[in-house]
Length: 105
Image (cartoon, rainbow, N blue to C red; front, top):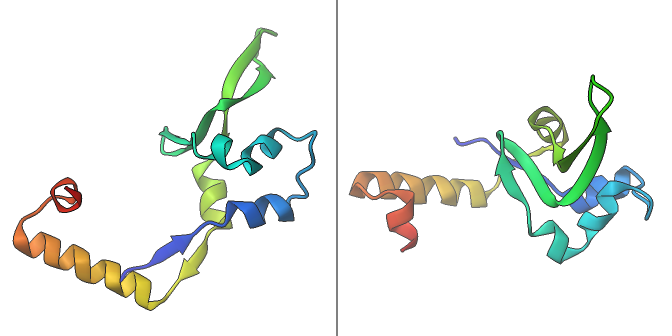
């Protein structure tokens, strides 16, 4: 059986008590949230900038990111027919010799 995890970031942000003053508040907007990218194996929003001071005392502007360790800790395991269905599709795709890209085209 395939193990699948689910992240409900809206619920997570609510649990974190995100307020308008918090950097993450911008991500409650669907348009801002949908600009997510995968960077260094984690979720990254280049449209939401944070400023941090480096060791030299210089201010650096970086995209808002949630580390993979945090994402893993926040994820909830899914054990449903949906994950079984995904496994069936993957198995059939591999058996037919298709890549994921070929399958969606």
